[in-house]
Image (cartoon, rainbow, N blue to C red; front, side):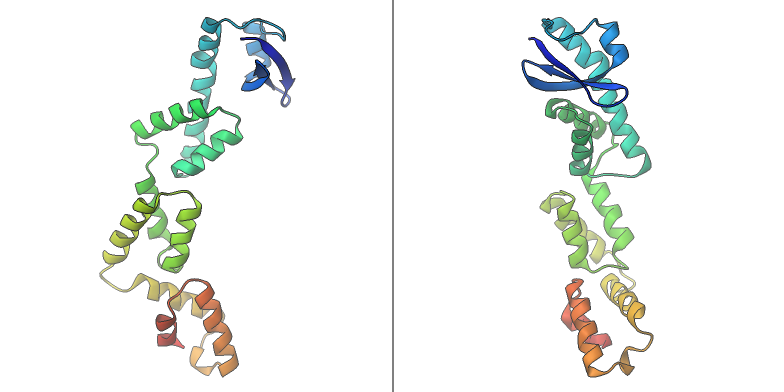
Length: 201
């Protein structure tokens, strides 16, 4: 393995290229500590030391700092770590680490996501948002079934629909036929069932 390029990434970090391919980011102090320079042959033992002592622990620290402020799904965390220029191998290891300690759980994430939105968004929109976030279809279907069936007080989607209508008008019955059609179309685009919309308009 040859360090073919050391490229300044920002004020404090450098991109390290090994055999012409980007490998990882290091700080200037790391370069000094391990005497790394362009053209140098990187022995496997030193490469492993850099990964295990610097790159992997920093990736874990980065993941934990991301998860500290809000729960994330696996896809989101993977994307964030990729943006931080960690390799796929390192990201896979970090994801396994945080999952093992219960810091990352797509089912828990999906449940919290649905609960916090089911009384103000349509079921269809929430479903679509979870798909976009990369949560698996199996988890989404299970969570949606559980959360919407467990709401034994009142239909959550009807509550969300009423709130959506209230944002547009105080008295839906006083709307002109044209305005009513516009509102129905708007609500339908937001994923609400047309039969439910007609209950209120």
